[in-house]
Image (cartoon, rainbow, N blue to C red; front, side, top):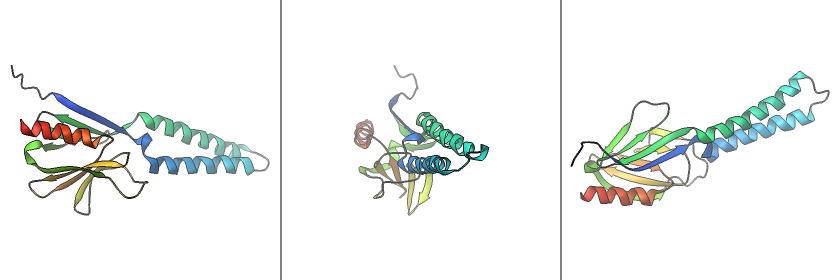
Length: 163
C-alpha cells in the first residue's frame, strides 16, 4: 500500500563544532586570552575580562558541538540538503543524477563550512570531515557534498535509482 509519504532512507547531521578550521581559530583565540591574562601585571578588572572571554570561547566551542549546520537526508526519490539558518532546502532528484562518486573534499585540512557555495564550477556543501560525495547532474551542474559516510550515500542512491 502506497501512502504517498516519502520515507527517510538515510540521515546525516554535521555540526559546526567538529569543523577543524573553526576549532583552530577559537582555540588560538582562547589561548591568547589566557596567556595575556597570565602575563598581565597588577591584574585589574580588564585582565579578569581576558580570562572571562577565554572561558566564554571554550564554552561556545563546546556548545557548537550540538549545533547542526548541514543535514543530508536521502528519501525514496531525492537527496535533500538543509541547514539551520537557511529555510531553503536543496533537493536533488535521483532521476537527474548522471554520476556519483566518492572523493576527498579538499586537499587542505582546514576548510570553512559551506552551504550552497558556488565555486570553481561546483556547488559545495560542507561542515566537517575530509570525505565527500561528488554528484554530476544531467544539466551539467556539479555538487560536492562533504560527508562522514560517502560510500553509504552512494550505495543507497544507486539502490534507489534502480527502482
